[in-house]
Amino acid sequence: MTFVPPGSGWPGDPAQPDTPVAHDPAEVRELAAASRTLAELTARQSVCRACPRLVEWREEVAAVRRRAFAEETYWGRPIAGWGEDRPEVLIVGLAPAAHGGNRTGRIFTGDRSGDWLFASLYRTGLAVQETSVRAGDGQRLVGARMVAAVRCAPPDNKPLPEERSACSPWLAREIELVAAGLRVVVALGGFAWQAVWPALREAGYLLPRPRPAFGHGVEVEIARDGTSARLLGCYHPSQQNTFTGRVTAEMLDQVFIRANVLRDV
Image 1 (cartoon, rainbow, N blue to C red):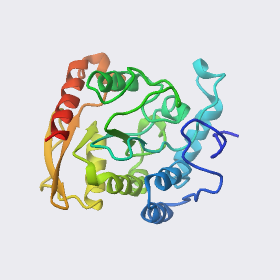
Image 2: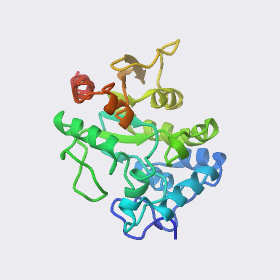
Image 3: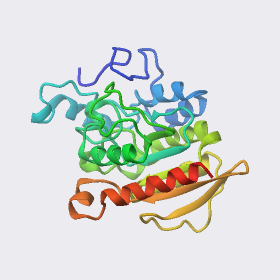
Image 4: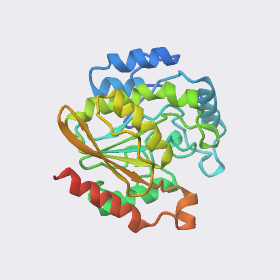
């Protein structure tokens, strides 16, 4: 087996053996739209098989494994949204890391980007622990939820346009289900910024035109059902960005401090 079977006892696994599986983009849209609750939606996200290239890659990585994790069992499935069911802050990333989320079963968990991100969330009161190393490690988000625009680890960390489109209904429906209390959406990186725009529109948000360019600290007002929220841009805490100093701990903290201010407005 090159992935963890649903319902086998993995910490935080939202699915069961009878959870419906999407096998193509049309079924993703159908199952996402029919999900009445977050629990139902995340279960379906976590067993999706709509993109053959991504399914093959995530399961190959789970079978071959990195030497440092050779003795571990890899999750090897899509990564569902995680955190509060009624968040005020939604954090949107690109996709799971091959040996991070694809290994641990939780977004930004077990990789260096996550080390930077969770340390910042802890310092700004949005997480209860400074690190996130594995599912079931006691980490918990406070007033926040975390999702990926593409739910499977892609080769070279680059999903294809058709894979992004296929995955978009999962994100749009998740935003729709948490929209009532949502005050801030933080897009980590330019890809997340681009991906969240159509998802927000599909979830019923009114968005400005033309679309503002992505940048660190960019802030855009959006609204749904007469309630305003803010979309914030944040450079992704990738190894390249943190090693080169394009992203610093202070820069991350500033974005999440601003998110905390906006959630209380």
